[in-house]
Amino acid sequence: MAQRIFVTGGAGFIGSHTVLALLRARYDVHVFDNFHNSSPRALRRVTELTGAPIGTTEGDVRSMRDLSAAVDAFRPDAAIHFAGLKAVGESEAEPLEYYTTNVQGTVNLLRAMDKQGSRRMVFSSSATVYGTPSYLPFDEAHPINPSNTYGRTKAMAETVIRDWCHANGDAGAMLLRYFNPVGADESGRIGEDPTGRPDNLMPFIAQVAVGRRQKLSVFGDDYDTRDGTGERDYIHVSDLARAHVAAVERVLERPGCDSCNVGTGQGVTVMEMIRAFERASNRRVPYKVVDRRAGDLGSYYASTERARDVLGWSPEMDLHEMCASTWNWQQQNPNGYRDG
Ligand code: WQD
Image (cartoon, rainbow, N blue to C red):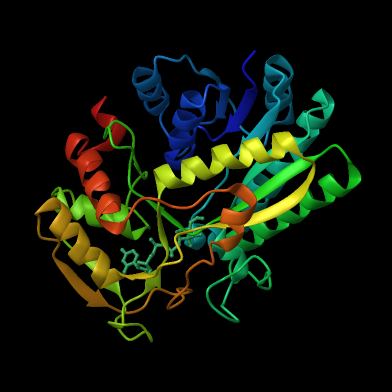
């Protein structure tokens, strides 16, 4: 009997790639998603790629009733919790939305899992919980000091899960702190499809390259980095999905609460990303340098030792593959999932 994994936000960019990896690892998956920032088409395409059905409930983690009913019906062995709001700027403008969805939504899921006596959880956290670096690379012992509301909701949800684990000896949780997820499955059938104007660098570059946007605004070139532009640790979404499968295996094996960075340990600047994308797509990416974006940090990247030691996981995809796979998805789907 296949072990059953309940995946909130499973139709999203990272969620759909993780569901693909779980199905290929022979897990049985049920997705719970409100499709606020995702499309049911992503799940249909995952089923096309695997031939495996995906049980799906359209629902909102803010609704204890919806969540409880779906968890009771599926009786999961573990859950992966992706569902949440993730735009830093928006979080500053609408903090209560972010606390309700990202923190109360996590409490609701834990309650629903408690009712089922199923206390194994992988949580989608973020490097944003670290805030301004006291040192680099960020390791998991770095102080938690988020500098924006989004990061504070992720840090608070981590604390909720940690306390839940301490109160329940049989509970197991893995907090995965993502750096910058990019790329797409090699098939090009699933990928990042942000609603409206992309906040993030890679989807914006891809939309410029495919002709949906005129040019990229580079937010500042006066940082203390190799070329003055912002430096981040980009991680291929398929590598990130593999890390989630490893984390599920770990929480199914043992109780306790642990955290792992999920990055490559390598920083890439905005200009380096532009050049890499132009090489991978053979398209030009026009840009103009503008003022820094409020709240941006100059440079951060991950220490990946703990993920290797605790999860037995290491990233495999390089920057060229991140760009080439993004371009393959964008070219096949110029309007994302709206193309059907
Ligand atoms: C990357 C670099 C920008 C857009 C955010 C969230 C974080 C995580 C990942 C959820 C920076 C520059 C960007 C553009 C640019 N999300 N940039 N022009 O800000 O590192 O992280 O997404 O967990 O929580 O904060 O990602 O892709 O927005 O920016 O010059 O149009 O690209 O200044 O240096 P970020 P990003």
